[in-house]
Image (tube, rainbow, N blue to C red; front, side, top):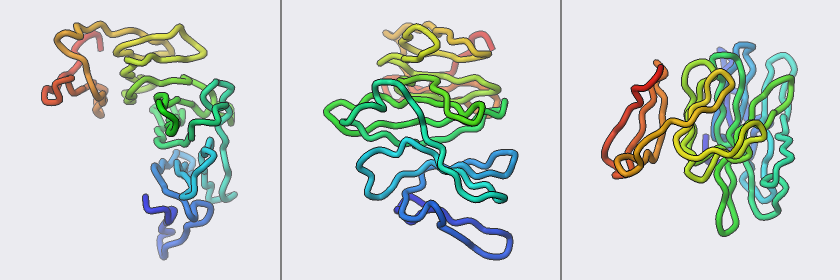
Length: 205
């Protein structure tokens, strides 16, 4: 639900909730192989930023999993930060995208991975758009840059695979993608800057 009434769940016989999600706008839900439910949400009276993910374990109940980011964006008093999207990749890693709003010019989202029972910073700035492919593959549109503690700053269409970032060259006079999306087979699609053309990447697979 996105009206601030939290989440509901069905136990096989009846509905329950909202529990820890009461009074929150639920933006995304993901169930992992252990049967735990990960919840991206924000409070209706959001003013200080959320900086956390809620997780429900049927055996132990609710846990708050705060994002710990030493980067400049989470230390800002100007921007409100909240987790808007969750993704469980094929290698078993949970990813959280943190959006930022407020101020005259809000920065692009950040991206974090859940490893060793804590959130790890993948990118302080994850570009303008991100889509997950097969395995650990991710695609980024980063016209404003991909800023990460792991690599130099990149710009343009980027591909992450096997722990490495590569730049995918393109002629921006012919195409400058506005959105990026990977399908279930791992093939990448994007909409051209004209808003009507649809493109796909047919390079090295």
